[in-house]
Length: 385
Ligand SMILES: [Fe+2]
Ligand SMILES: [Fe+2]
Image (cartoon, rainbow, N blue to C red):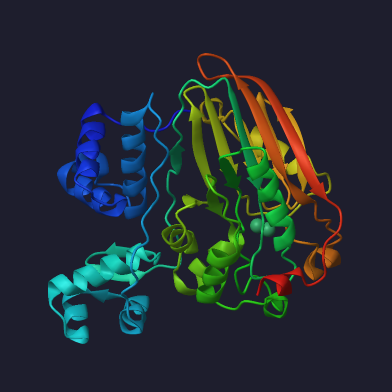
């Protein structure tokens, strides 16, 4: 599966803007104005990602690692969030806030940068509780390496009382010890809210602000290691309740966390090798292999990634099917009361994948190593408050 084509002209212009010191967000905005045919249809987040990819493409063959997204300064007020939750035109916003049009526009842009899902329809701006589908694609620089290694984790459910942060930190210690520079997270980084009646009794952090701040504080940080993540249905609960995409907030506050988008993303590891991160939405099946098998069967030929890393089911498994190396990536949350009630087990742990690549970047050897944990610590979250 190939990523979208990026023209030489775009790569060149992005490099110039980078040299001028623009942030990725500023650059995305500038490119939307300068090259509407290539950027006009993209959201702020997509435009920002496209710029980063174009820059990396320009640097290919070099040594560049993805530059971090700089934290955006939060400026929005409760007022504007309240008004935009119901929807407002720009002139109406100007009048109600008593600011100039330029300031109102800037405030709307600030909210977008903070992760609020702002949509505009017929001149009315509103915070939407549905994320529009996006084409999430992240390009990693490849300098012709014949061996690649990366870590996989999933379903950390930070903010929920069953999270096992100590085990998550053990995994990252192992990744760091083995010199791994890239870890991919398959979603449900936080436990979210209002997932089902009674979930509030299984949370030790309530609300988006608390869960984001806590995740920023406790998520493992290791020198030279970047975690690229997608968000899952638990993280998405904040989009449903308040129109907030917490993936953007986490990435803005931690330079080692790169947000690849909601539910799925394609990571281009080399010209001949893609890794898809996927967080499905449905429940578990009677047989563990059934769901990944159906997901893979549903892919058409041109969509097939080389590797598919799947979260959500809290299970660990490897299967090679339709030439796709597919993995269920486990969890670092213990079995919840909900799962006990449903008779669902939690496979705690993570994965280290080693790839041997041919000269054209295609996989010639695939080795998954599972790092399982068999015992959860009761109330481990209390060790991280
Ligand atoms: Fe989960
Ligand atoms: Fe999930």
